[in-house]
Amino acid sequence: MDLYAIWRRRDGDWQVGRPIEEQPRWPEHAAFMMAGAAEGFVVLAGPIDDTGALIIVRAASREAVEARLAEDPWTISGLLVTERIARWHLRIGSLA
Image (tube, rainbow, N blue to C red; front, side, top):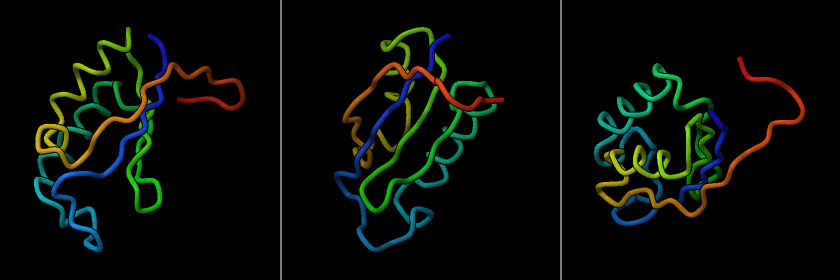
């Protein structure tokens, strides 16, 4: 499995100024991300400033990443749009 870095930006009906936990479909998105972490797909994830999110995942291919993210409730609702997916080569440090 390879590591991939994914940059996602806020879009659609994102409610600027409201906390992430108050955005539409937050419980479903949170459950999706936590399930991905429990399965070993999501390695690291979190918001970047007020613009979007960075996610590091383990996957067999870019297509597998795209397919998995297509199931995210925030992808389906248009709250997050994927800007870039790139294979990431960890050189310094380690992931458990």
